Length: 259
Image (cartoon, rainbow, N blue to C red; front, side, top):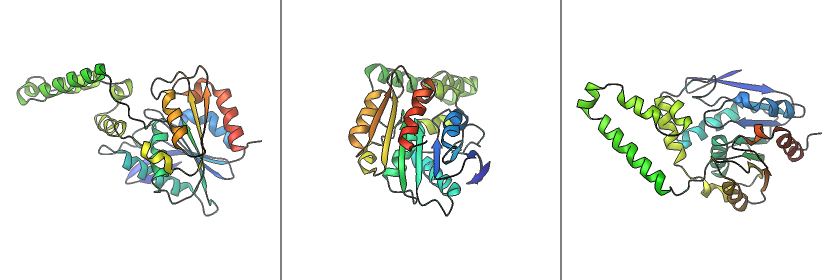
């Protein structure tokens, strides 16, 4: 299925009947990774999952988005798929999708009441950088400054782009210039101030081997979100819902009371 958001074509999946559940994927991922979750939920729920602009089959924004703009999109998508019979909604987000939902729900921006919230290996906690990380950042800034000089750009027109493509995480290296700028914006936005404002019943699911958003982030969120609970999946990494799919789906069925 498809919707238009600010002139961008947005691809999404919608399956099942019943109360509305909306799923948001993480950075560099797409809606297809939720197929097992969608099949499980569609037995009892109406499930919608978009490719966020810039990922999957959705068009890329013309300029870099901040977290506020990802929240605005998510809000618009929820309103797009919500029908008059949907008095409330269940939301789930993995990684960046979770970060977006924390701010969206915690800020009160969402018009539709949230019945339940599911955060999977969620991003959103910004940690103090280690000395090695600070050294890498300084080296990157020096290299970028040098390669941005007009004489250097004239002699080596593609050097800066190649330098940037070799720097940073795998997600950063594989991203387009616009999405790299977006990534820099969102990863530096800490959402912990919104955690205590979340009133929906919240399930946190984490892999104990997650290296991208460590388990300590999940424990912090459990402490800060009133009435939340944390399920830890042993041996799972950042994509815990794929690494331990059977266990994850069992937790999901229990939380959403799927028969």
